[in-house]
Length: 115
Image (cartoon, rainbow, N blue to C red; front, side):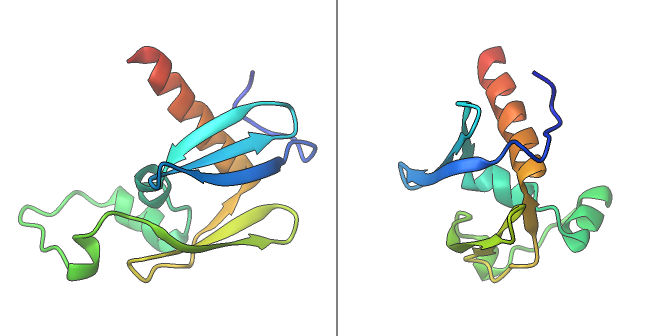
């Protein structure tokens, strides 16, 4: 299966599993499991993408809100093409399109097969 999606591929179900994962059921019967940490680390917003491109700091300073595991406070649909996740660290500008979620799900599935 290719990593791209067409507009005809969309989630038909989202559910929390084990408290640390999001299960996405797609309309083509594919099922993906993504951890909250994976979703937060791969936030598609411009600010997070810019931060990922920078070299890591030599002496990182962790803010109190970063010391806790990433968890969503809420997930809201954005039209018929994406979800916006409001994170417990206060971040909420990432719009996770269905295409991004599908790609992350396929990457996670491939990593599980490789381990």
